[in-house]
Image 1 (cartoon, rainbow, N blue to C red):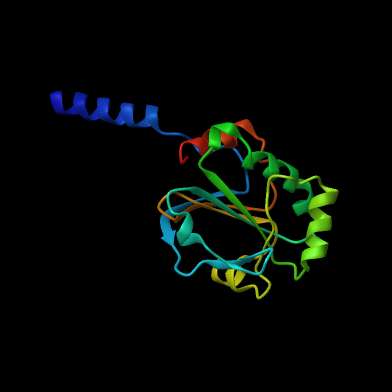
Image 2: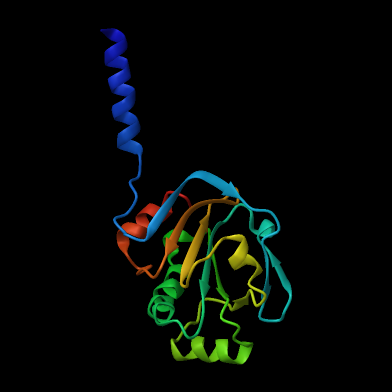
Length: 171
């Protein structure tokens, strides 16, 4: 009987501390955390950006294109997420995979008043293939050890309070 009581206590306390996945239909949790090697893409100056240099930070790679209406819809909330003071260890990389040049990408950001994010490119679509991206927008979330723990397939409102509270548990 004592063992049963201890088991129930441990089970109950574990559930009380677990943070549930937000009720967002296109948020997919990764059961077996994935580590990728050589996650490299270009910044606006065509210099390599390597995710390994950001170990210790919570990361979001957001794959988008200027012709994508859902990308246009979610980008302002993604911009706000980058400056959310409760997520001060978060770095967001919006990666254009739409074959757009820098000028067109800058126009897209200017039109949407995106001021807190930088522009990155995967012009060769190497990363899109590596991550098996099926469409845009797609966001891949990495924990502080560089392991993929979740994906967002399609657009969401990154200002969603339930999502932000869930994300804080990884910060």
